[in-house]
Length: 333
Image (cartoon, rainbow, N blue to C red; front, top):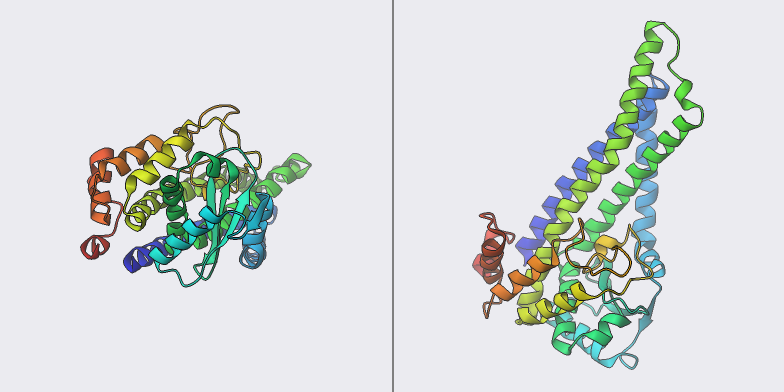
């Protein structure tokens, strides 16, 4: 388990460095389009200041903001005894140092998410639709999946990456809107300096359009892998892969719409809640692996609920030679 956490942290670091480079380049080209001589440095400073402001907000209030956006309310053992008991069971099975706070979202769509920067201060939130639909084994599978996200430090990465994605999107929108309202007149005239400035404006426009797309593709690529790994960890914690597989099957067949669905929150849920109204959730998302595939992998594990069992099932279903679980974790599992 610790090797998985370390590998996650290394991947997160490399990804965040890559995102940081995109952010700095965006700040540089935007600043240079305003002033080719000194604007690049000013643009980098602006980008970093905006990023650190959003980062402070995310670290200090990110969990609270997510819960408010989801209209989640905290519940105790007397309110939902089975849910509370399942969360406590999975917390003990995972060896978490403290009990996550339990939240419920009053919504008929079956879904769940976890939040918190570390296992000491975390929450698990589920919808009433999920509670009404699931058996105890299925609920245990869903909760184990969310506990795994906390344990694997996925939430910290998702928070940092979301802030980076948001910063790039804000900078791009500021620049594109400034060009719409008069900024496009810069770079006119026939002098060499103005021609050079006009070229920089075109480069900045292209970068402002492409940067948010590139950084989201990076974000989605890694967040999809984390869903597989959370499924593997959940199967290991519950020792019953069928529980999570059956839960995902019910979720995928649901046509209920999550009223509080939000683009920034979508990657946090066990299944992407953003879908055409009244349609099923099955295989619609770029933020999550196909639900059908996740279900087939879990059911292909049979009674082998270890990491190696998931690895073998993953490779068989996806026809991939490259596994999803680190080799050292396979040895110790």
